[in-house]
Every structure is written in C-alpha cells, then in structure tokens.
Length: 180
Ligand code: DAT
Image 1 (cartoon, rainbow, N blue to C red):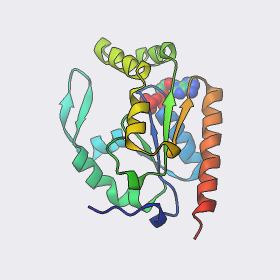
Image 2: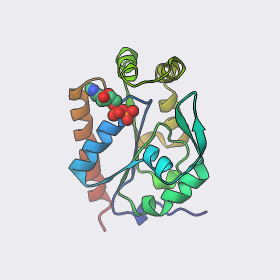
Image 3: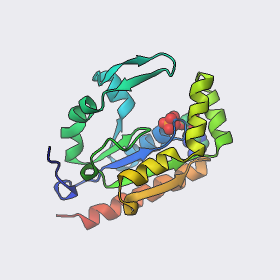
Image 4: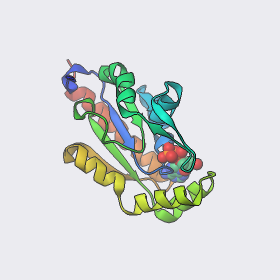
C-alpha cells in the first residue's frame, strides 16, 4: 500500500504515546480543545469498530487487530489533523506522522495513578516496568526519525500546561512551514 507523505496534509498528525497513566488522554483532550485537531483515541476506535481478536481477561485489555485498525483509520488520518492517543507507536506508517510526543512520569507518581484504577498487580507491575525501562521511548526511536520525537515530562499540572503550550507552538510552526 502507498501512503502519501506530509505534503498531502494541510494539518499535521501527532502521536501522543507513553505508558498507561502517563497522561496521554488528558494531554490529547486539552490539545484538541485548544487547536481544533481531532483526538483519536485508539482505545475507543478498537472497541467501537471491533478492531480486535477478543478481550484479555487477565490484562483487562483488548487484543488489537493492527491490520484492521490501520485499515479502519487510514482514510481519516491521511487527511491530517489528528492527535493519536495510544500506548504503542510502532504500528503507524512513518509517512502518516509528523510529530511523536513521548510522555514520561516518575514511577512513584505512576504507581499512585495506576493504583487509582482497578488494575491487577500483574498489569500494574508490567506498566511500572515499562516506564522504568523506557519501553515507549525506545519504540519511538526504533520507529521514527529522531528529529520528530520529543520526550516530555508529565509529573505535574504545570508540566502538562508547559507541554501543551509547546505542542501548540509546534503546530503553529508546522502550519507556517507547510502553507500552500
Ligand atoms: P493515559 O491516557 O496516559 O492513561 P490519563 O490522561 O488518563 O493517562 O491520566 C491518568 C491520570 O493521571 C488522570 O487521573 C490524570 C492524571 N494526570 C495525568 N497527567 C498528569 C499531570 N501531568 N499532572 C497531574 N496529573 C496528571
């Protein structure tokens, strides 16, 4: 399959990724509100459009059918203007993506945030390990050019406000650079 590059888009596509609990949804919702870009929650898409092979009871999560998911979102995403919210980034074609934001959080704060959800011990531990081992940062580096990856801290509300401002400034600059 051929995917057109960024020249086909008049709005950028951004991935916001990171370990569950890091603050992806909160960041994406605020960004969508402030910029008019659309928040694409992959979790919701997977559920609503049935892009899965069932439910993993132990980990309380859907087993994602990645081909079905990509087919399902391809037409929308290629138009541009999406903020993709997902705890993985290696499945999206490089040509779709203009910026990869990897959110990071201190593990003690992450523990508290995940504890507040009804995560099993196994799922909680897996996610803490993932954050400590920088799994999502490494996945981003393995999948996209270093120049489009930005690692941002999401410990506090102040962090979040600064992150949102920074991404908004990046979007404004992208639009200037890509004006037709
Ligand atoms: P994710 O979508 O990555 O799973 P979330 O946006 O649902 O994460 O956030 C999980 C919880 O942590 C939620 O109660 C909001 C809170 N939170 C997220 N980022 C934060 C930040 N930078 N400062 C304070 N609280 C934050």
